[in-house]
Length: 389
Ligand code: NI
Image 1 (cartoon, rainbow, N blue to C red):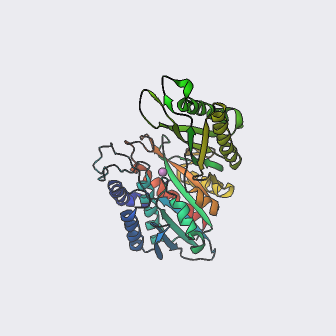
Image 2 (cartoon, rainbow, N blue to C red):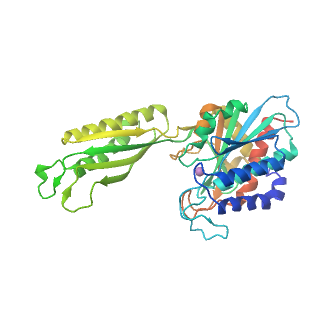
Image 3 (cartoon, protein in one colour):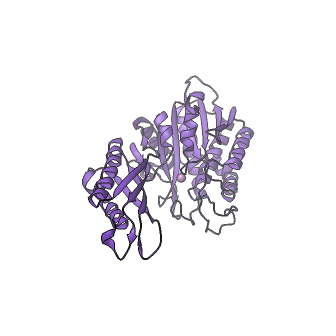
């Protein structure tokens, strides 16, 4: 079955909503304008219940089917926030907010879920309840976690939850997913290295902190190559190396290293955290310096549940055909806070092709409006199949 025809009629409206959101990007939890538009539209479509302010600026809409013999409740989730990037697309609907842009396509995700909600509220061709979830702060703020902690799952009796993200390089009309880990746990760390500062021409009177910190940067990569199972996935990236001064003739007293650690299983995550501490502290000790690790756990692994992933795969195949769905795609080492919703309820996260666009988080990136009927059809078909009327 190809895309649902009704979405061809709605495409110009949904595109207009998407471009309006694109022009007015909002960061993290400050998605006030976006949330208001979402809530107003959901009411306009005739959602049975619309609740704002869940997880600070999150919005939830409830749509009942024609009947409710199944008692099933399915959650569909979109994210609403943008990124602190200066847009360079030059599009007529480019960001009007200096320094912010929708560089991850969350404008498209929000518009597509609104499109699906329009259709589901007007047809109600299902037996059960749909909960449409619009979350703030996916880009580092943990908006998904906040909505879960706010009691969303219990309050709306959500039994299963589904999410979708666009993927550049994957052709439009294609889907990709896999059971098990799809996206990584994303942690961050800071290492304070302290030696003994002094005159750069008299290194023997110092403990050279820059040399010690450099050894730590190099040694950390041995965790990936020597401590981790070669078949497990670990990324350790040191992304910042900061000394106290920029002088040419001073060995600094302190150096601060920062970085990210990405893993796909709890075991690898625990191993990496312990190993970073061990390597940093003992490498420093070997030179007579000290290192102190501050390790902060971020988003957990995005873990797709077996049954719901098989179901999502079947829906994607009905929309796009068997060949257009990659059901064993390689995991991505980026993080995603839909992971908190998948910790709370069984469900599946799916990638939908964005075609030949710039990569996510690039200043030239733009959501591809051709994806709209594909994504909307996936949502609608998922609901009508999971809860047949
Ligand atoms: Ni994103």
